[in-house]
Amino acid sequence: MYKIKIAYLSKTSEGKPFWSEQWVDWDGLDEIDPIVEEYFEKEKNALRGIDINLKYALVAETRDITEGKFQCGSCECFFDDDSEQCCPFCGSGNYVEGCIDDGEKHVE
Image (tube, rainbow, N blue to C red):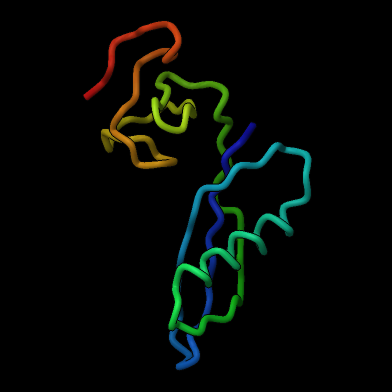
C-alpha cells in the first residue's frame, strides 16, 4: 500500500490561484485519475462558498506505508522522518518507534 500526495492548482471564480494538497491511499495498481477526481470533489465540498475550478493536479510524492522506522498509532502508516514530531500523513503525535503491535516505546 502507498500514500500519494496530490497537489492541486485551481482558480477561484475571481481568477486567483488556489493551491491545496492531500495524502491519499493508493494500492499501486489502480489508475490515479479517478482518485484525483474523487478527492478534488471532496475538497470542493469542504470549501463551501468558494467556487474553484481545477486547472492542474499532480502526484507530488509517493511513499510506501508498509515500511519505516516509525508507525503511527492513529492511521497505522509507517514512516521514517519524525522531524516534525508527528505523522506526516494524519498529523497525529501518537506514534512509536518500530511496530505498534510489538509494544515498542511511544515517541512523544
